[in-house]
Image (cartoon, rainbow, N blue to C red; front, side, top):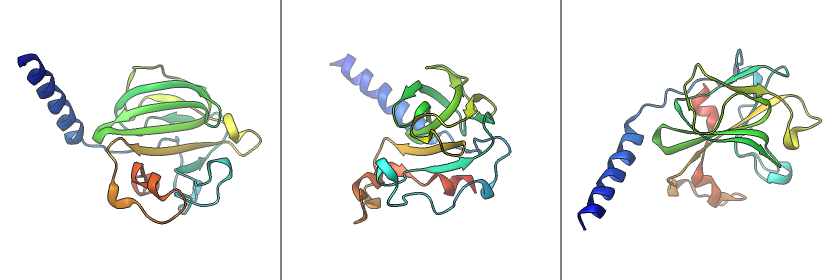
Length: 169
């Protein structure tokens, strides 16, 4: 019984610490500004195979450096069908930062990264093949924001996604 209480206490402390750490998000694409993305693209419908656009596309020259937008732990570094070469970073407040369509990946799983660390380069991998080079950047919360559910297409999914554009401005 004491072991369970200890494990519970440790998990509770880790959970609380995750919320206390400040985010301090930075623009992930080197040299990019608000003119390099569409400020109305988050939760845009219709959006191809994914139905609703759950992030922001930041356009830049092919091969432009991408830094982590926050401090965190790399949970995944590899390739998936739609996102192509992708990196997932678990950051403060238990939010997962998703970087997709990379040309090159410059980090590895379970690496600790910060805003000065290069995690990849802008590209056209995955379903961005044939399109202008860009970074697709999303922020997913592991703890759902239930009040964000709405009647839009895929509205129930909205409780897991934060608008990254609000953090880039």
